[in-house]
Image (cartoon, rainbow, N blue to C red; front, side, top):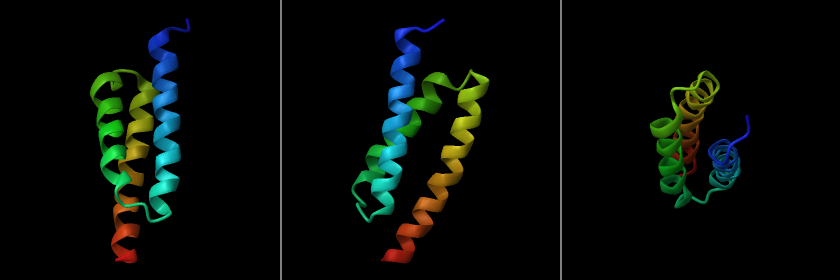
Length: 73
């Protein structure tokens, strides 16, 4: 069943995806915004199997992002 909560979560996940690509493009100040969004997703929706898989992916790509930004500095 499609609920407002599910639609909102999908929009948040999409925003998080776009922020990932903006951060890779050297906009370092977006790291904090992306961290807040990631914490929101993991904090409120981690009980769902699909979301937990997504959050594991986010955690891995969060580490990769930080490493790439460190390489830029």
